[in-house]
Length: 334
Image 1 (cartoon, rainbow, N blue to C red):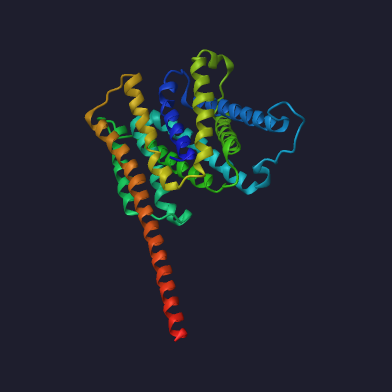
Image 2 (cartoon, rainbow, N blue to C red):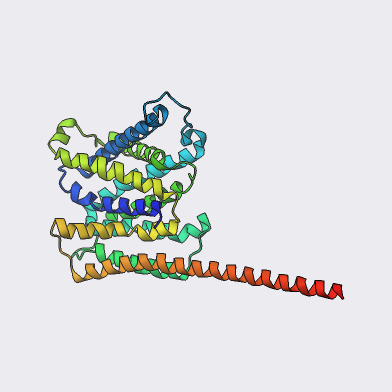
């Protein structure tokens, strides 16, 4: 497992705690999103500033040394792509939390996680990544499993407005992933900082005209420890792990393994909140894990087999070439 892939999986696990922590915060969903993006931005900016200061001063407190400028200043177009990616994330969260109120967490989450489907379908056109048979089969299992995991039975038809908001959040997810891939030279803490600042700006721009700003008194009375954990750990640390790895992973891997997030949310809800874990959800969990693993392992094996076959063919061609050269020299010697 690569380091970037490990960071990506760790971020999904952290994001799985979001619903549990947010359920302990007595604030409207829009204000929760605003607070988490604000605190996440502050945490990432502080971490980036500390990193730059350490590089300037040296680990032993020595004199200042030359430090390379920020990559986002050297690559403004890539920085703009990251800003658009972060803004899409913030807008997607707004749509998603609004959909929660209209159609419930299960249906809204199902709509939101159609985003990876959009990304994977367009990956050959946008990024030149092939859709292999094993990846498509594994992805189908993951989508079916995600449906079983998050689907909830209800007596009435879902609100069309909620479904539309859920679909809009899925579109924003796809936009976020696509633009993240447009900045290969800006990564790590710097990329995460740019994206989270843009996310906060987008959420704040929505909150000001709609009266969604929050006061310190409201925060203090709404479980301050939970607010801090959600903003600093789950959003700050989680988005650093997520964004710093996202641009370095194939979009198809991001699309498939992204479904581990709702799976972890359901598992944690069953363990910590004693939510029901029905046989259908257990089957869905197995399909998510199995489909993601099959897409990665079988697809990787197929790729490895193709590479081995190409290598063997090259060796065979080289051997035949040497034999032909020997025969030609023998003929000339006669």
